[in-house]
Length: 147
Image (cartoon, rainbow, N blue to C red; front, side):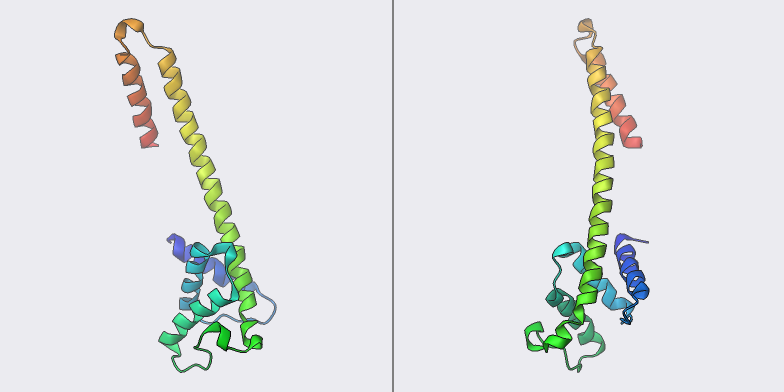
């Protein structure tokens, strides 16, 4: 499963768990919502949700009454996008937390590589003119790439 599918699935799960009577529309529209998670994230608005839905609706329900700009639909209809917006924001927060955790792990790994390289530098034999050190650093970097 790729990252878009994971985000799409998470959106669907949260909508299915929703107890407010909001029911899923169609899997394809959630793919557009996944794009919102990645592009606007926690800044997602009801208008963003509506625009994503309109892209889906143009392909699936082109004559639908609400296939028009957000500002032209009644406020009561605009409010229907709130739950979707809230779920997109929730998934965006989760996604960001996962990205931060992943980056933190990578930074720590790189820190270990640098520490090992610095230790190799400390053990330079001055008679080698630094060549032994260079080979040690190359070995450390090669090992890190294999991991």
